Image 1 (cartoon, rainbow, N blue to C red):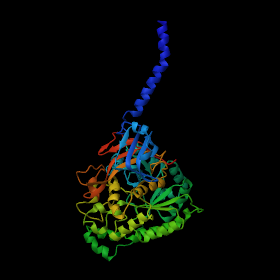
Image 2: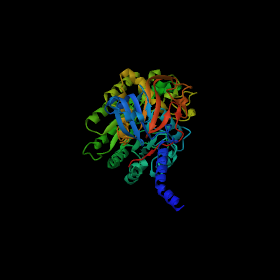
Image 3: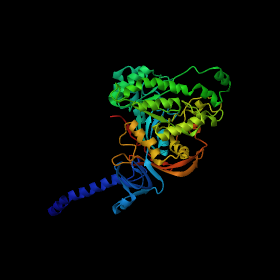
Image 4: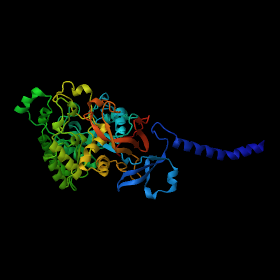
Length: 503
């Protein structure tokens, strides 16, 4: 009996080791609610993988949520094929999109959108990271306390990674201590309006506020994002006459001429010179959001960049997809600020984007309750502005861009690489060893009608200007930190996205 006890005791370490190995293997391979794929270590293969060195045929090895290796097809070894492989064939595999300009309206206005529906829509659109704007939520994110509310609202409710811009407003702009505390709390940068925002607790800033904001941001090497329009007294006789027909898009367009953008940018350039090397705000960066005017405003920005000012520019797919002359009377789905301009302006925007003068793209997803769009009345002057687009920006960009010879590498640059740099996300934006495995697989040749039969995940698809369009570029699968969060109409059951804070 004593012999058997000793034998059993001597076997205990072996039994424990086997049990530990079994549990470790089970935990690493068992499906979790975070992913539709029951593997922690696997391969993604494709004939078209967009990398920093061009488009290759090969495979990406994913391990523990990051890119472990990247191999060309001719370099594959036999052991690779023994592991689990997700083969996308001829479909494109590229870095997940990073949308640096989205309004998810949470907390406080999640009936407009909200973190769950917004991030589900993002995943279905190939977006793996969103940076949420500080306004349209209630309250606006303008302090450490309101950032905590935003963080709590996002906890366990996001299906992709989400970071947060903070608001630069008159109440904090001249208080360096408050701004520094706000930035230390983790906002990735600041956002300000040079015109009324439409949100009561997010008032506009003047050039003094912006100058002081840049001087604080310089210490943290983070950007200031600016809505560059200033109000003008443009309601002359012609606009007054047209007010009787507010259903005409041209009536609204006259109220926000290109000179509103140009004047704002002229003002900004009086302080952007401080961001040059050796300047008092060196380290800060000025980012112009949703540029619409591709003429005088763009020319001013190009010259400032040429002089060494630290400036970047984004525009949005709706400015590249639509033109003023095609917007139907009363169709307030198309109302946004700055406005969609004429066809010639659209052509110039594409020229600037493909030529490198415009740096990146964003959705400026700005939904609302359908009633606020006044779709029945069709009053462009009274309707809430904002284009609802989050899920559709990749196919919208590709559909419009094919006419201009847009390449897959350009799509990845505009939607992944450059946005990652702006938001300070150094382990995102490209499929590279050591980066997070944030990946989208999509079929550029697949066309679909965006109608009531299409699976849309934004909260109010009926208000999107893209509804009724035929688009090319179907998203097949989206991976966030190695988790398969979306695959052809199915989402992972658990909301396992990460909240991103600046360090």
